[in-house]
Length: 119
Image (cartoon, rainbow, N blue to C red; front, side, top):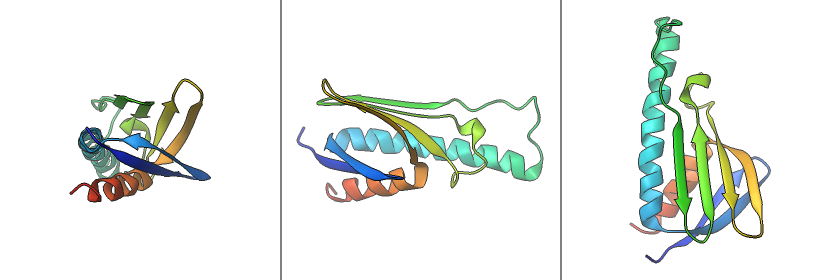
């Protein structure tokens, strides 16, 4: 499938790589599930219903293998709100490996901008 350049804006710089629209949609679906989990955890905290006995939400893990290897990870149980959440990102190929954090809101914006090119 033909793709384009997805640019992720990081706290100090950006990284761009070839990505395809289908994989971007799959990532968007995973992020939507993560957002639901983050909202549920934040709701438990806000109402005081969160106890040591609460059922933890599963971590989000997304992997893409193409020209590059992309992995995103986020544990929704450690963030107080979706606005505070960060994801650990690993991007690598045979010559370079980048591991850093990205703000969830920034990732959503970058992904939406990429998907707007294909709609």
